Image (cartoon, rainbow, N blue to C red; front, side, top):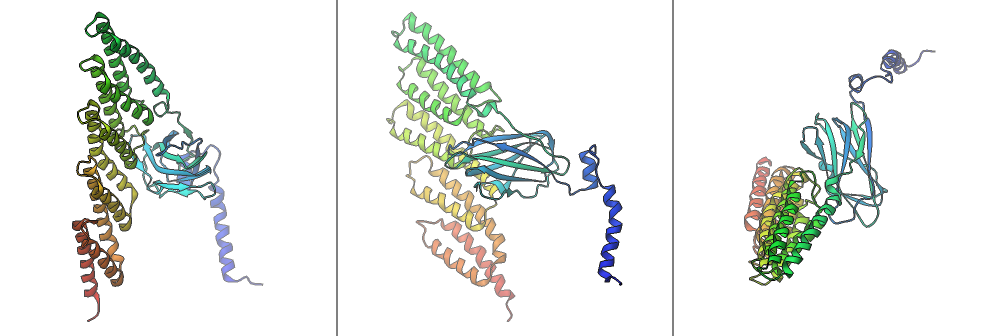
Length: 426
């Protein structure tokens, strides 16, 4: 009995494929590069695990090192226990270039969820490390990250990072204990006595040693919590020290230098800080409360004003970087702009953060304009009209919305409306 023609064709294809499939069988000694040539769609997977994720707000940075730099085609991430918030994931190339994984920005993962896949990774650069900023949500949590390469299976290991642990905190505390001993001796001595002069000299020596350790340790930084404790402590001690004493100048130097190192760590490649703009705002608001609680002519007030001013100028820069990685829709960006505009409008005229909120609002609204110019092309005339009605109402409410931005929205929507009318049959 003759077989149908479709079955005969299928049988012929299978016969032709058989020797090709046999030739493509790989010996155990075939290299990754040879495998990639034989099968360009090959996918070799490696898994890295992070346990005991911190519960502190803003999370902590966890680094997964690759035993050998490899180009990666995709990543998958999954909670293995509890609920985890992924604030961000960045790949570091073997040339110290950073690649942000946009799909893994501000996402929450529960243990029951399926693995979350990244966007397709097109870079051919060798990836040496994957950094994960993660926070446990409410209890014990751990995660698993799968890295996929077309060359060979990546070998991932969690880096026991000296810079992001409490070890450097302990080193600084040990040095500070010595500073405190000599500070106490100098402060308890009679002014201008030999005892005070000697104790002050030793105090200054150990202050300089503390600052040198803090500034010259390129691969280590103190934890954020301990740094904030130090900043408040140094400011308080500077404020309460005898005017003109070595302690007054020494604590001021430690407060100033500690803050400069703290601020610089956010801008360098060292990313074990919690660097989200929201976390920085919380820190700045706390400093502002302490500044407002200080006497107008106090030395502490001047230190807090300095720190608030510099953080206030830095935060919008950090926020712009975050916006660039989020791929926000028009509505999302507009909501961001409105959130910070409300904070700007509600801030007292003397608030040092008022300008910060205004700049952050402007950054988000600028992104919203760009998004609207793209999205408006997909709107029909009814949806366009509804948006015009919405933003006309907001334009007429200058107490709550920036008129200049609302006008820009209306211009974009009106021009699109004119284009739609020109396309209608006459």
